[in-house]
Length: 631
Image (cartoon, rainbow, N blue to C red; front, side):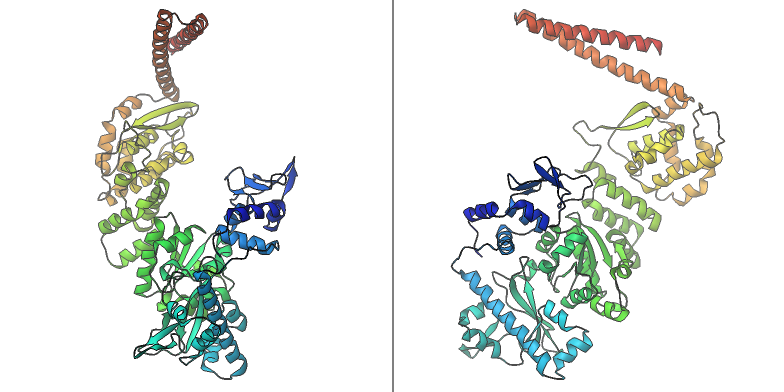
């Protein structure tokens, strides 16, 4: 329908009680003061933050800020347009829509709906009245469909003639020009005044947009012929563009949102095959190239995608292209490769798949899927590393760390994420000065280590400082895992080194006095794990790393502090010195301000307040100096 006027939307918002609408949508509400509270339907939560006000006729979540008046609430909940929301609400609450003159689009919709009715009735007539028709054998024996499925998917039939549909639609009063525009008929080349049916002897599938409107058709040959395409689509129009359409998206969007997962397939029969097994969160691209518009349509419904395409080379290539588009929009992607070059429909039928779990067992994470494909192609580790780093550029820092660790475990591929991790927008260590600090906690003491930007290939200053801490004190080792500091290690070999240091403390150092700070003897450590480091030398030179650590000022200084209490004293002294410097700066600033105020003869009260601040700071300075004297 045409764009709905704001005045009518306002009327709907007044007529429909929001409390009743929210209850209808499945939210359990409990009275709390003047309002009602419930769990938000827009996001997962344990404590109710979704408030419904009967007085103001509004529903709103105080956590995610979604909701509003009835039309806004319904539009957001169903992820539909305002026009569609108004239509659905009017139908639910028996409110008459304003009568409108039909525009050109409405006429096109009427033609398409009439064509769909004709195709569908034709198929049902054949099923009911013509025994042993080739179409009946094809649907029930070959495709294993049921009458219920045929009705659910609105399947139809275009007769094996050139006039039946054309004559039917012309008799209903539609113009040949309109039918021609929609691609339902074609002009004869030898006579422009004569027309013929575009779809002939084909099984028909109605195609709907994201609002549920029929916008076009796909016709499949029952018996394949050499000169004719297996699938045929009517002409693209203002209503219908294959690049903007996903088969059954409108019908399955609730299941997609409920399960928070999209199963993406290629063909109409793939979708039907899943539906037969009760799996409805499935859509298809209809054999066309996946586009940005497709990605946008999916993103508004879920960002978890399971791609199940044909297992031939074309299907694999298409799955990779789709994944590349989706990861740019932060999708989590898994890919299923089916055996024996089967498509999903054939696989489900032949293997008698009962539920989705058996298929999901075959699913591979997108990144791992790519790596395995490259390995099958005998690409070198360096090539795979380079391609994988490029692949990960759209992921956040923590996800990159996860993949670096897992890829090393699974495939012994060591990633150098340095360039994109530390120089891009996800850089945790990049600010105006080029510094950040990493906080590690030893018992109750805070320690701050300034970290420069990475300037080495195999490791950086962050990596080195983290390793130094756990080499010099086993007290820090649990914190590496508990505080997730390990994710800051940018080379996967370093993650393994941390594990070896942990093993060294557990197996090769006796339990000593708890007050003694146990540490790793670097020379002994290198000797014990010589084979481990030798195997990884091509990716990580431990000898150079060891030398760099031993020459580090931080390592030399801390190595001379074997007791934990000494470490605490050092840290405490550093903290007090920092406090002292800060207080002295504040005193200098206050003295300058006070002098200026006196010279400007400002208000006496303000001068007195500033003077009190100065006295307070000088007292703080005295206390800090006393603490330092005791250390």
